[in-house]
Image 1 (cartoon, rainbow, N blue to C red):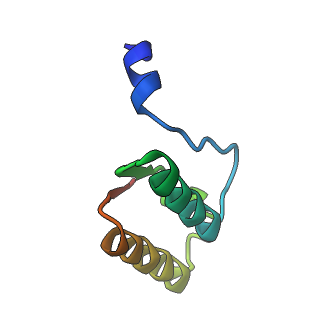
Image 2: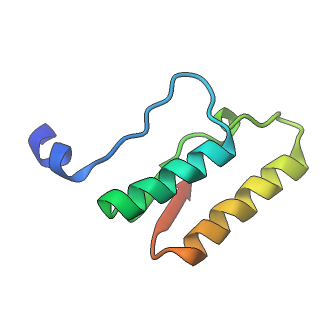
Length: 78
């Protein structure tokens, strides 16, 4: 199974938090360079946003939606 996934899965594995801008830039790179079409963000709380930063969460969601509308991809947010 790992051999199958190795040829088809590209991971952006971060220990700790990654800011939303960095995540989106990596997503754009992965799509353009490797043709990645499915992106999973796990979890929203590890995207450099405070739990009570509702405007920041909304802005990140809007950026994810804009990314999805710009490129032929799917984005899943945990």
